[in-house]
Every structure is written in structure tokens, then in C-alpha cells.
Amino acid sequence: MKARYKKGEIVCDRSRPTQKLFISKCVTGIYYCKVEEDVKRKELVYLERDIIPFRETAKL
Image (cartoon, rainbow, N blue to C red):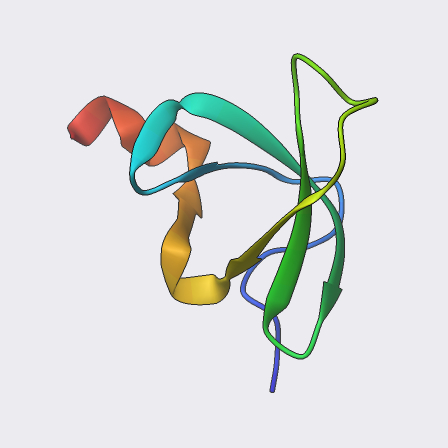
């Protein structure tokens, strides 16, 4: 399975489109992300369907 997003990309959660997330790693369709404003916080885990590229948030 090829990952849609790459390490280092900025994405956002579909339910919180204003919060920027930084992808720290991707393992078989599971994305480990850090909140851009607080990188010391624990990583958040998302499935591919739960995140969208940050540039798309303007369309919401």
C-alpha cells in the first residue's frame, strides 16, 4: 500500500481543519502526527481517511 502523504508534510484532521499537523512517520496507512504548535506533545495517530492536506482547508 502506497502512502498518500509523506513524512514532513503538513496536513489537518477532517474534524479540526484549522489545526496543522506535521507527519512524523507513516506505517502501513497509519499516520503518526505532531501538532505543529506543540511538537513536544505526544504524537496523534490517524488513518489515511481521517486527514486531508492543509491547503484543502480553504475549500471547506
